[in-house]
Image (cartoon, rainbow over all chains, first blue to last red; front, side, top):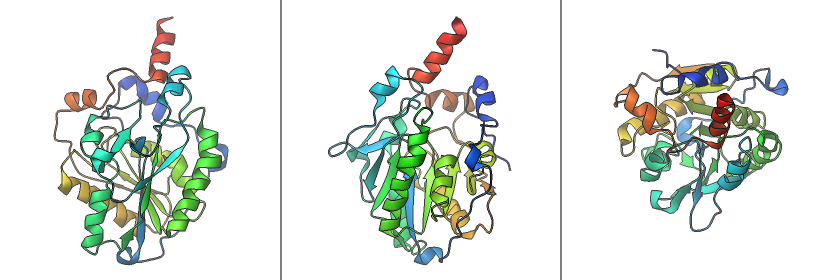
Length: 168
Length: 109
C-alpha cells in the first residue's frame, strides 16, 4: 500500500509540494545509525504543531506572521514528558487546532511513549520533548543555523538516542 | 520537517519523520520516513484513539531503530475513518493562513 501524499490537500497545492526544491547542501543522503536496542534506548519526540506550555512559555509569534506572511516563527519550546493536554496551547495558523487541543497525543504522543516505556518496548523517554512551529519560509535559515543546533544540543544533553519527528 | 530531520541527523541524532506527505519527505532525502494517509495535524491518528496512536508510534520506532540505510520508507496501511471530503475540510483553519491569503489575493489581481 502506498500512501497518497495529496489525499487531504487542495489540488492547487500539489505543484508546490510534489517536488519541493532541495537545499544546495541537502542534496546527498545523511544517516546516523541507531546503535542500541530500542528497549535500552532513550527516545525524544518533536512536533511542528506550535505547542507551548500556556502557563510558563510564550506562544509562537502568529501576529508577526500575519504581518509578514512568508515568515514563520523559528523558535522552539521544550515540552515536559508528563505534560497534560490541558496545559498546552497551540499557535499554528495553517491548521485547525481543535483536535490537537482535545488530545495532544495526535501530534506529540507523550502519553503513548510513556506506555511503551512502561511496557518495556522503549528504554526511556527524554524528560523534555521538542515543539516547533512548522511553517518556515523566510525564517528557514534561522531554523537551520540556530534552532536546529540548539535542539540537537538539548537532545544530546538529555541523552537521546533517536528522535521521532511529526509535522503538523 | 525533512530539513530539520536532516539537520539533527547530520549532528549524530538518528531521526524518523512520520508524515502525511511521504513523497515530499522522500524527495527531500529525510533518512527514515513513515507515511500515514491522515489529515494534517493528525500524524498519530484521531483524538482518543490510543490503539492507532500506539500503532503509528511503534511503527515509527521500529523504522527508527531498524532501518539499515538512508531512504528507508514504510507506509502504514491504515484508512482514515471519516469520509475524505469531511476530513479534507476539518483539518484546515477557519481562515486561510497568511501566506495562502496572500496567494489568493495575488491570483485575483
